[in-house]
Image 1: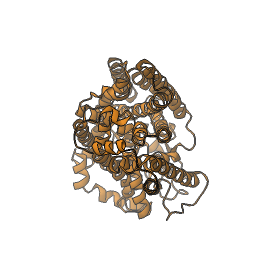
Image 2 (image 1 turned 90 degrees about the vertical axis):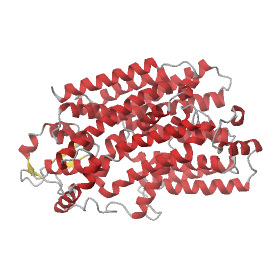
Image 3 (image 1 turned 135 degrees about the horizontal axis):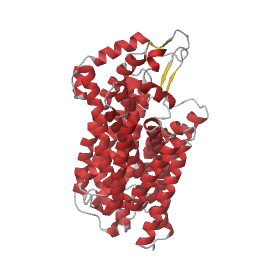
Image 4 (image 1 turned 135 degrees about the vertical axis):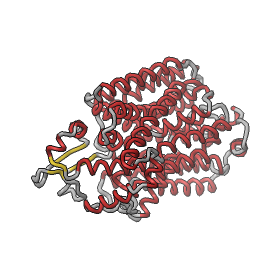
Length: 557
C-alpha cells in the first residue's frame, strides 16, 4: 500500500478519535469550559501538558534546527526544557493554589488592578496569536506533502477538527484530546528515531546509539570535507553572549507561556499539580533526549543520500521529488556538471534544504516502511493541533473571561460566559486559519516576539507576585509596560527597520532577557517608591507560599 493511502488511513483514524473525545467531553458550565472542572488526574494532566508544550516547533522543527546549527542548536534544548523545569518548580504549584482560570486573572487579582489585567491580556493575545498561526501553517505543510493537497485545504481541515473539540468540550475536551495526541506524537517520533539508529549504528535506542557510536565523529569529518564547521564546534553560528541570552529568553519565556501555565489549573489540588509537573517532565524527556540523536542521524543520512549524486540518481528518489513540489527542498545544478553538491557557500551550493523537513523526511530517506512514514505525518498533525487547541483556549478565555466577565459584565450567568467563550474560540480558529493560509511575510521573524514578550512581561510579575509581597500594582504595571516597550522596540528595529543589534551584538531572539531584567528593576524600584499593597493582599501572598491548602475564594477577589 502506498504512503498516501497509509497516511489517509492513520490521519482519518486519529481525527475520528479526536472528534469522538470532543463529543464525549462536551461541557455546559464555565468551570468545565475553562479549567476542565479541576478534576483531571495528575498522569493525564502530565501527558496533556507535554502535548500542549511540545508544539509543531518541537516535533517538526527542533531536530531540524539542531541538525543545521549543530552545537549551537542546543539553545533550543536547554532553553525550552530549562523553562519547563523553572515553571514546574517555581510557578505551577503556587499558581494552582491561587485557583484562577487564566494568567491575566492571576495578574489582575494579585495586583488588584484591571489595568494590570488588560496589559496581561494584550501580551497573552499577542503571544498566542503568533504561536497559533505557526501551528496552523504546520498542519497545512504536513497535509500538502503527505496528502498532496494544497496548504489552504490542509489548514481548513485542521480548523474544522480543532474547532469541533474546542468549542464543544472547552478545556475538558482539549485536555483528553491532548492525552490521545501525546500518545500518537511520542510513538510517531520514537519509531523512526529507533529505526534510523538501528540502521546506522546497529543500536535501536537513539540515546545510546548517539552516545556510544562513531556517528558524531563521522559527521564531523563529513562536515569538514564539505567545507562546513565541525558539527560539534561551539559558537560557530552565534556568539557566546548571544547563545546565553537566547537560552535565558527561551527559558523564562517558556516559563511564562500562558497556554502551558493554565494546564496546572485543571488538577484537583496543589499536590496533584506537583505530581502532574513531574509526569510531564518525564513525558517531555522521552522526545527531547531523542531529538539530538535524530538530528545527527538525519543530517548524516541526508548528506550521503543527496550530495554529489547525479541528476538522474536524485530524480529517481520519489521522496525528493515530492518534497521538491512543496518548495521546501530545491536543486540547482549551477556549474552544469550533472551533479548536485552541498556547500556552505550560497553562491556554489546546489542543494537547498528547509530545516522543517528533517523529521518528516527522515523515514523516507532511510527507506523505512510506508506505515512508519504515515504515522510520522499523524504525529506532526497531533503536535500542531494539540498546541493550537491550548492557544485557542487562551485567546478565548482572555477575552471572554478576563475582559467580558471580569471587567465588562461581572453579573454574567454561567450560560452567557460559556456562550461567549465558545464564540471567541470560533473567532480565534477563523483568525488562526486566515494567518495559516495567508501567512504574513514576517511570521518567521515574529517568533522572537512570542518568547521575548512572554519573558519581558509575564515572568517577572508572576515570580514577584508569588515571592515578594511588597510588589504592588504601580510597580507591576510600570514593569510590564517598560519590559514590553523595550523588547518590542528592539525586535522591530532589528527585524524590520535594519537597526544594528547595539546591545553587545545580542540578537532579537535573545533581547527578551534584557527586557525581563528591565521589568524586574522597574517593578522593584516603583513598588518601593509607592504605597504597599493592601494588607489583605500581603496576607494572601503569605498564604500562597504555604505548602498546603487552598486559598479561600474571597482572598483573591
